[in-house]
Image 1: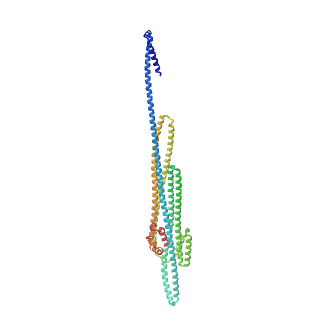
Image 2 (image 1 turned 45 degrees about the horizontal axis):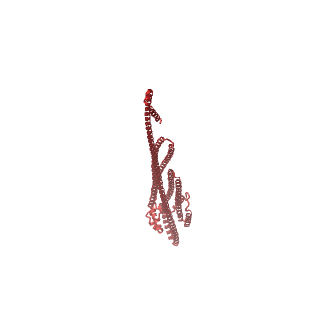
Image 3 (image 1 turned 60 degrees about the horizontal axis):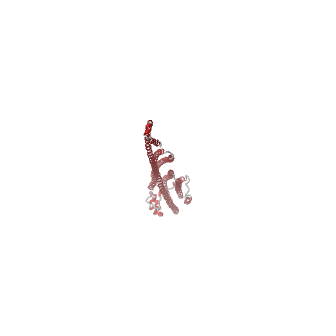
Length: 564
């Protein structure tokens, strides 16, 4: 508009100056001035036209630049939206992976619980089998007591017959002629002297043999006491190891539940785990108490048997005192079967038995062979103790490995906690940057979004790498834990098999040492339980192969002890 106004003025002046040529001629100065003004007007018109064209070009250039800027802004917004969508997709994938890891951990926990349920069922079956064996041993001991009672009655009858025979001999000798009686008396005295000398030598040999037998019995009692103490120690050690494994299992379960952040499930699992551990500990305490009670019963029965032997030896001199002693012993055994053996009473009874055996005739010299067998048994027991020590060292190594794996799991748990804290801070920073970016200009928002995108991608990649490492470490720790549990189960099975093998070896050696006594004992019981004893090929049999009448290694050792 500023350029168009001078152009219009110049055109009006030019039209006004085109008057009569006469007037122009009269004033040449005015004409030159007008021409000059015309030139100025033409120049101004040209300049205005050029300015108009330039203004139009600038407006078109402005519109084009504005359009390009708008297109660039739209492209940047689309790229920002695409980056946000990718970030959300990556975040969803990460959450999916975390949920998969949680499901894997839960599945492993379920499998571990199933394995523990199977182990508890196996323990229950084992307890049931031990109870059945103890009942069978009790029945066999009752049969043995009845057989010993029959034997005592027979010995009393034999003693009565001997007294009657002596009385008849003494009464018949009184009716013989004095000379014949004197000759018979001299002959009888000489024969009796030789017989007494022979019996004295035999009694001295039998005394030595019985002294060796008493020492062997004392050694066997000490061995039984030592074995019972070792069993208690092994059971206590197994309980401690089981408590450690359960404690480590509860710690692992609590850590996994902290990663999943499920508080309600954590409380439920912790409550159920603690309740289950208390039930198992109570069951194990009851089993330990039952085993100790069985050991006390066995020691009490051995003590009663020694007392019975002492009273039986005294009964050779006085039948009435034997009957009273047996009756009192039976009453005391019935009323005090559940009591403990007093300290030193068993050794005192054995000493008394040793003193009474000096008056008994009949025996054989087998001390050297028994001592060699005892040396063999002691060597086997020493080897078994070395094997048990090696097994204990192996268990200590396994516990050390398990402890290291727990420490590694704690370290990984701390790393995962740090990563979760870092992810929380990143989310907060992302939200803060998103709020701050809305207040800034387009270019600054674009640059900040690009930088945030790069940083978020880098941090996300680092977090994914760390999460993958944590997953691999957790899987390796779980596999190590399962391997340790499997090794412990295998070691316990090997220990049980080794104990069964040692029981069979000891029973077989006892049978080889005393085959005659064993055959006599089986023949004495053939009238009452012939079917049961005929079905047994050897005393070293397994309970599951004998059906309804298992005896076991403890019953065989008790038979061997009572038989002596």
